[in-house]
Length: 164
Image (cartoon, rainbow, N blue to C red; front, side, top):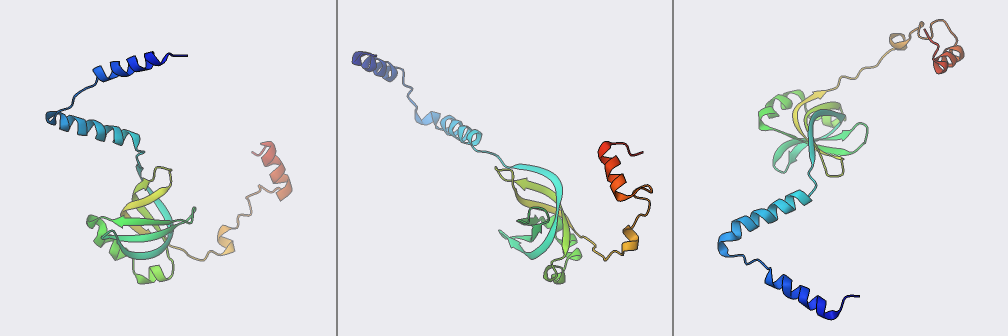
């Protein structure tokens, strides 16, 4: 147990070692505080890439040309802002019917993730309509897929790792 007198003496020592900050020190103090705040805040991550999804809206987002896409895997709404340099090019490839029909698109550009790792937005360089067409069974049917084995035999050999 620490005697009460020891606490008072420590307090007095701290007061004697205090630092006096004057007006000339203000820029350095402000910078130190800003650096500490910046180091403490999580930073969003960015990377080059693309997303695919359904086109939901062509509009503006915070005053910039933008599209809203429902991302294919997560089913989340993602805002994709369009830079002025790419606005005309992207506008040539999309129209109102694309939105009304929920056309599938691939958006390429800078993917911006939030602090939790979720996709926050995309800064789009290009938007491409994904061509969708009906496929006949004959186009995907492969009679040699199982190498002449029955489906049961093929799966057994696949699981055993003995396929040639």
